[in-house]
Image (cartoon, rainbow, N blue to C red):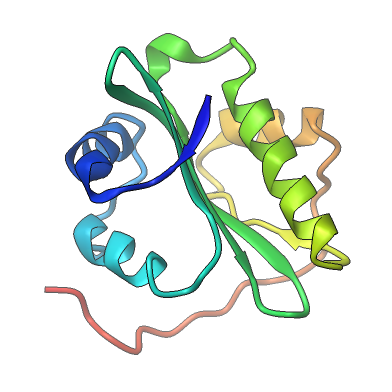
Length: 137
């Protein structure tokens, strides 16, 4: 059911991310995919009838694990696909000795915060700081 991303998925992945409201004008999703393919950690998709219906990117820097672009198509939510992908990510990271998984959720996305809290994730008392090193076109 969960498979590794291949370039044939690209257009479907980007369509899904847009449908789920994950893209932003300052991030080029094609470049995000290209960058992800260089890090050696999983980028998973779930298909249904040849259509991409869910995605998840996993990362690990030797200190903390991360997940990005968890997306489930609106018409397939509530079927356990997000939970399945997160369980796979947690297993992948545990097998590599990763002590903690961090993820970022936009403050405006209450629905996904509730999803993660139901999985046992909690709000840490941290502030995320960032700077743009490369501006996407």
